[in-house]
Image 1 (spheres, rainbow, N blue to C red):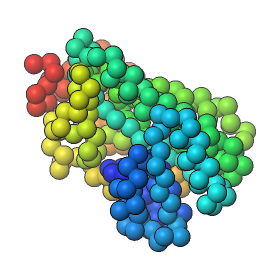
Image 2 (cartoon, rainbow, N blue to C red; image 1 turned 60 degrees about the vertical axis):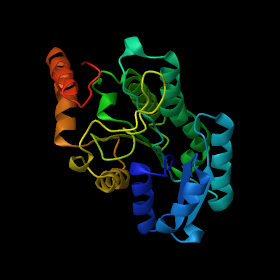
Image 3 (cartoon, rainbow, N blue to C red; image 1 turned 45 degrees about the vertical axis):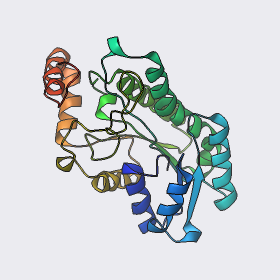
Amino acid sequence: MTGASSGIGLATARLLGSLGANVAMVARSYDKLCSLASSVATADRVLCVRCDVTSESDCKSMVASVLQRWGRIDILINNAGISMRAMFKDLDLSVLHRLMDVNFWGTVNCTKFALPSLLESKGQVAGVISIAGYSALPARTGYSASKYAVRGFLDTLRIEHLKDGLGVLVFAPGYTSSNVRNAALTADGTPQGATPLEEDKLMSAEACAMHLAKALAARRSVATLTPLGRATVWAHRLFPRLTDRLTYRYIARETDSPFK
C-alpha cells in the first residue's frame, strides 16, 4: 500500500490489517509509518518501507524488501498521490511534472517491479484514481491528466494480462475527506495549506477503504464511488458539453475559486 501514512492509504492499511492480512506500509515518511504501524497490525504482520515512488530504485528496493519479508505479493495498491489547484495559464510547469511523477510514474514504477510476483501469485494491482480521471476538473489540469493517464495504463495492463489471472482494479473515489487538498500544490508549487471544501461532509477515508476492500475481494475491474461521482461519469459520456458547464459552475462556487 503506497501513500500509507495518511488518508485512504492509512485507513485501508488498518482495515486490511484488521482482516488478518500482512501489510506493507509504504511512504516517504518512514518515522511516521513506524509510529502508525501498531494501529495496523502486530509487528509480525506489518512492514514499514520508506519509498519515494518517483524513484525507480526506491520502488525496486521496496518490492525487494516485501519479497524478502514474506516471499510473495498478492495485492499492490497504488495510492500515493498529490493534487493541485491553479489555472493552467498561471501554472509553473514544474507543478505538472511533479503531479505526473508522483501520480502516474509512481504507479508505473511500483507496478513494474511488483508485476513478476503478482503474476506468479495471480494477484491484483489496484490504482486509486479519482472521478477527475473520467471527467476533468478545471484548475486541476495536472491532477486530472495524471489520473486519466493512470486509468489508461491500468486498463491496458488488464487487457495485456487477460489470460494470466492478473486482476487489475481502477478505483475511483469521489470527494473523500483527507489531507490531499491541504497539501495540494498552487501555481508556484507551494502547498495551498487549506481545503476549499467542507471536509466533514465528505465520504470518510474509512468508508472509502471499505469500498476498496470489497472491490478487491470481488476482483472487480472498476469501482466508481458516490452517486455524484457515478452521475458525473455517466453525464460526461453522454452529455459532455453540458457536463463542462455544470463542472465550471461547481468549481466556481468553491471558496477562493481560481475562477474569481
